[in-house]
Image (cartoon, rainbow, N blue to C red; front, side, top):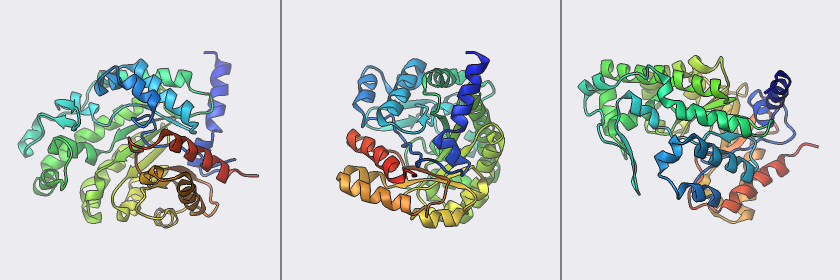
Length: 355
């Protein structure tokens, strides 16, 4: 690619709806992308997924790129997000990861006690995850010039929870027990994750991502005091370690009381789940930061009139303030009609169109 092409691409991306909203600049319409926008609700995704296992899809750059590009093109969203998963970074850290049919991710050698943390280690050579970065390069090559590519990673607490619990959990008893009972082991675990995540996200950015999102999918199980003591310093360290390279979206779900602490941890954009009105959420984090969200994913299972009404409520909650990126409050559900997701994108663009 010539220097002139690079300059044009850079200008197109800089002035994209998504990145202008990140900078809280006015846009011609509200940018929208959907968490889990390349997923089982899309026939085009399932056509690819039916030929391989989930891990094969994640670890084959051409296929990961294909489903990422398909989702952006079919849905008409204003940003693509890398097709990957939160957990494969745990493999080079010593975890034996498997995705079981109907059960989701399982770690066969979880950290059962504080002593087990000694076998958990930093990712020293990030090239072991080159399949992710190769996918980024392929996607960036083929994306429209004005469509940013988002990278992502699990936040330290969510990844620590998987490593300790060994999979999903209803009460997070094991990870909280470790957190409460052994400060040294907890800090060692979180430091390993923090250092590795900084390398991982910087490598995604270097490969071609224009922004990254940090997912703290399980942080909602924490009280505000526990988040501040055990989690915030580590999430902040990750964000501080990458924010010089690209904008960061800081997203947690499950407990709106954590929002001021998310803002304290950092991020150019604070992701909002559906459990709080967007107007109240933006007030809680401050109007000097952009926000993302926050339609309840279940709304997409209802009729188009309801979807439109609920989406309009989210848009109106911004009070016309620049710096809003429309999204769901969490990932789109597999049973969602694909036509409803596409219609939502069209509705958001149409209702937010500036004269």
